[in-house]
Length: 251
Image (cartoon, rainbow, N blue to C red; front, side):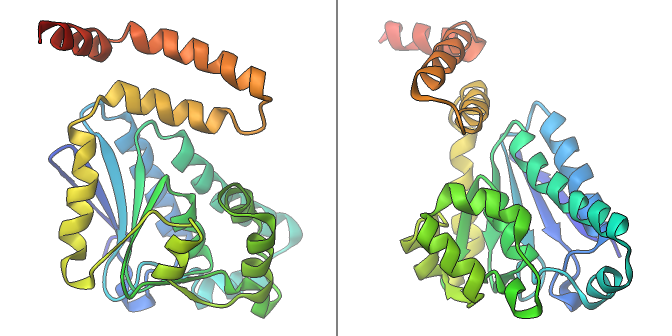
């Protein structure tokens, strides 16, 4: 059985984590397949967005027992390479041109919560739960901290990563960690309705916006403004913008 399932429909690529018997726990094979799928989808000029979801009852429960056993038996260099593999996945999500959306149902814990957090947008079912419980086994959600700290306040980030408790979808949206919460009964339909917006807006404008938004991390105000000038100039000469202006003027 494949670690993931890929389906392209109506310009949306859906990547389903396919280890339901293991609560879609991350392992080397799944991470490799995910990276390959993201690269392939990102290179497809016809696609407008990517949705990552989980098969079965949960989105993703983090690492499985075999992965934890591997950690305990590996050398420092082997553990470094293993951690860097996950880092590459998180980084790739931001490098992909189009929006990457996490559709979370059930539980998103540890590396699974990190995977969701790494996505551009996070949608959750009402009964979904989240958490970074790594501290409970002496582990650290280290790579995801770079993303978490850009989403939340310092105090809230500290609380989540050092106490390791689970929290609800409503709590997650209240702290601005996720974007929307939808009813369990209509979750799949609501996700596709939400993501279908990317079929109606300019692909080139979305691509440029995503790239600039993440580029300005760490920039000074003036540098960010100047980067905005460059992107604004590029946007003006795109085919989408030229057609959009012409259509507007015809009115």
